[in-house]
Image: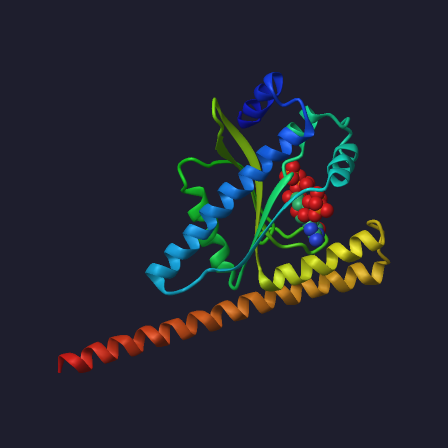
Length: 225
Ligand code: 0O2
């Protein structure tokens, strides 16, 4: 297991929070660079950027402790490594749902990354209405004397799904998870609108692409005459 890699390092030198954060920060740099390169390559070949923006963050210590407590674990370094999968998190926002699966596939094909879990909250949205594609991966961090596989959570979602999730997150925290029923219902309704908007924008884009392809074929045929 990749956890074991950090955990075995812990026996020797993960003696502090600082060492852990150094590893997770390095993991964000590695994965961030991979995503940049994939986006640039896609632009180079297809003249199109599947990614709108990328944001990364290290989870705040108080949020890590809260998550451990919520799941019934004590706040130890070992429990953080083992049970909190999103200490290092990267969020990729794109225009169309088809881009989400394209990016996820490109990440999954990188031979040095290991996929620990995948959650498709687009095909199976959460009860709250939340939609996003989550991957927990490990990336090898090459230190001077060893290689440490380090976990990163990658969240991939459309701009519309991200807009919904940001507002829902704010509301969730404001009401500490107990929002009035009419607000939760309104959020679920908005999530359906988001799914519908994403589906319509995707088919609109596909229609434009097939028109472009027809134009190119007609122009080629015109040249040959
Ligand atoms: P915060 O405050 O954003 O950091 P796992 O990570 O797989 O071991 P978990 O945490 O149950 O277990 O996984 P899940 O459900 O995939 O959630 C991971 C993260 O996704 C959450 O982290 C949120 O960032 C986001 N997320 C999940 N569900 C929702 C939701 O209903 N609404 C919004 N806005 N975001 C959601 P945290 O630590 O729970 O929260």
